[in-house]
Image (cartoon, rainbow, N blue to C red; front, side, top):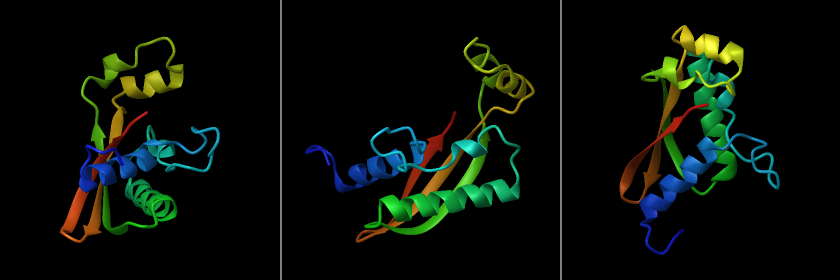
Length: 128
């Protein structure tokens, strides 16, 4: 926790770090993170949302055992201007084709945490 951060701000940072880190992204701790990137680019379905919710609950339980998760909600949100955003040469051709067909989206994850002051809802956006 940074000295100028409130307890809530520090909690938001900790949860966001877990949710926005892909396993393998940190070389010295390859198991750290949440397995959400596999769901990005896939067709949104009820089972995908359930899988994302489960992945979030598992990751937070494993890496932040000191917090009490009261609930997790996951939504798939289409990105504005996703067609133009992925025209760069470094984006794989298949992904550019999917986004060109309107498949660009982010996952909005809302996590309800039980605190001494009540329920705190933390929102994270996860994208490619």
